[in-house]
Length: 577
Image 1: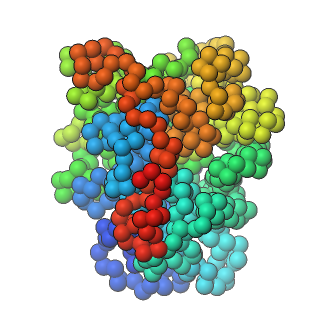
Image 2 (image 1 turned 60 degrees about the horizontal axis):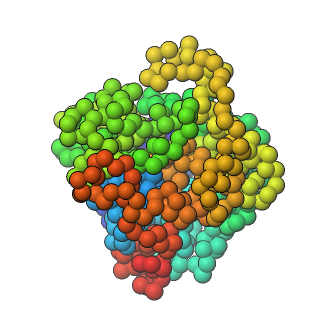
Image 3 (image 1 turned 90 degrees about the vertical axis):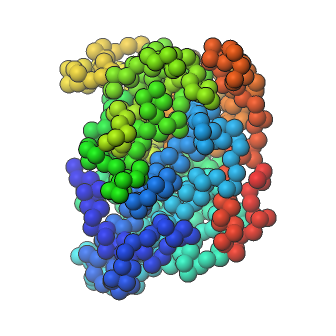
């Protein structure tokens, strides 16, 4: 199957034209020769419009300008996994990033501005493209009006996805409309309600879903599809509390037969795989597998599809930078037999199956907590699957899984439980995810023979998986949860293990109403020994000192945005900041 990243070079015409509509940060779209093409060049032919559309797809990749700008070079990965995980405390960080584990972030924190600008960069390109496309005569397209609508649908789906991420992070945000960019509309107020924002997103997704098909256009994986639109449309409805509507949308995806669980959970993160049958939306980062530091000698890669992700996730014992540790509480929460733990994380005394590096070999790292900031000595192996080498290769291929079929099953299950309808179907969906987690799909697909040398042994026979309803009914009662019903609790507990260090755990927990109680129960304040004391290294607990503030479940509007946008004042800042 073809992949759209093979065609990114086609977007150079579009990128050159789009450079005229930069967002608030001038560095984002700095390119040479702004005036090399006329402004309407993109809309003179179908070929040019296609190239412009590829220029929009390019915004899913980080921006590279041969600088050491961490926020630009790690766009799409580091800000996203931090904001989606660290506030739950299931993942943690040291250094500059530690504030995301203590609710001490501020409106001036760079990750918020990076997230804001990255999404509006894409929205500006979409809006400029859509305005120009609207004026094109349908006869310019091979398939006439239908061909024109295809391009419109893809651009509107991308715009919706970017707004989706802004609203779930910041609540009400300025909704730039077709033709509007921060260059021609520097002052834009927020809508009256968050519901208004979600409705704009739903309008774009619904339009695109009615035009796009289940398979990507031209068989280029990386383009928008019907499944993409329905999946995010359903989640937007869940944010609005419209669970019955969301359930119907999710059923369309499930019944389509387009997607299925990859038989081996661990293979989702293999560096040599991309766009598996489980992926509804992902972004694939590649590497040149050689000396791939910046051509000017800096740390930032010089290509849009390169990132130094393994350095943000590897153990500090083996040159990691301390941006992603897994908590001992999360590590210990897995059931016996659940293979997701070994596929996701490596702890003190264990060996990374891919790099063959064992944690705790060196004396200064042979403790349950590591480093001067007493971080849990557990690292993610979803992204740390190649050895870190400062002197040459600093980038490694990996896939950012934003929406997988497993997410669809768990969202569907939650809708069953939130509406108190078809609860048996909800438990069945959870059991499907768990069956894969215990390795039974490996055995049924004879993966042991096909992947005999795989770093984590494949199951050869089916094993008994604890029934989800029985297991979670007892766990729910034992822990004393009350904020959600047992079914929603089960969905979030599964997400905790299925989506650790990915891109949705924090958002799912807060949206479903369980996040505050989860932190209080799983990370009780002042539990264990305070860091810096003699016994600190002997204590596996996270030592939480802050009181959970529900206001922090929305992130602050970046301070720079309030300064630059006259349509927003300090009084518009989200509560608690």
